[in-house]
Image (tube, rainbow, N blue to C red; front, side):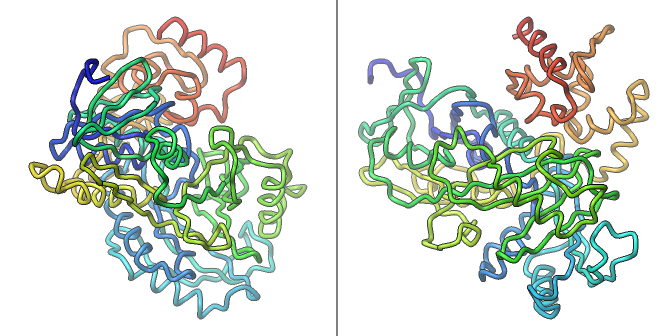
Length: 491
């Protein structure tokens, strides 16, 4: 293998989810030479299957995870400023269930939530009386409100990969890490395509596959325990009007969110189910669908008939790679991360266990601190005040208005979607628009598809319809076939 070496890197990062791309961005911005390999598409596993929230984790207060909540609340403000095009404030309504938690307990929890971290942008919590037009059952008369943020999770991963690339990182999607071995103070690694590379350090951010990388790819004993928990979501036609979201308490101690989604839908989730299968084949079960529908019916007034599996428009499931803290209940397992550094004989290996999408930037910063002694020339941390690509927008509402005026030939709703998806990068996309454009399918023109292929690593219809956009929710099978035919002639 040694005679086949092509390129030397400082860091080889395995995994193109939120943690891998976040570390790649931070490291490249500090001057390190970075290679990130992802066996599928960016955010193709856990990182695109979240509840799509940037939040402190209100329920974690019950498990005394005060430090985690504080970190997450601080990151909430940082990320909202860094990417206002894909992250926006969201008000949550928490109806009061008298037999579950007393009002004084909820007030204390919300007071802590308001004050544990910095809160410059979002409003404070309140106790309210529900009005007659509330979509909730009439038995709910009292509620509480508080604020968190919504995020397009897959695009957050993408923006970190883009920023890493802009700072010199090499991002290889659909490239599998095969194996690596230590040679002196370096790693020699093989990746798919019969390519051999060397790196001073490896960062294992493979999510649900983190232990497989250690055991199989590196032939090392796993040094931390991983606990896989499945979280599933369903998407149904809009359950209620308005932009507010609902957080629902259940008798089993879990919570369920009901969130306005893509204008005409409601996103409902999540479940917490122990998982021991192949993360690549994870799927929602009938029991999980019934569980989510049952609890929605317990809270919301029915629109005609109660919600059932027949009303599910779409669904997804993801496997959360949590650090095993020996907690019995899956819903109570810590969402904080653990960074395990193995450095015996040089050639460090840093493996990422656990974490949540909200704290990925902090995780990346801490990961680089762990590796700092191996890279003494590395620059200082920088991501706390740096916008993500397209996110240098002081006022999002004003920005959308400006784009609608600038591109008056665009349908206003389409222009608004572009502004939210691409931010200031909208100009880069529309600069490639020719005199003649082709509508490939509902809401997707050829110039956008070309931009996603050329600038955002998109390859398949699924990449475009479910991770780069969410257009797949309204597309027919025939529409998808048309896109696949177009892709076959353009890639």
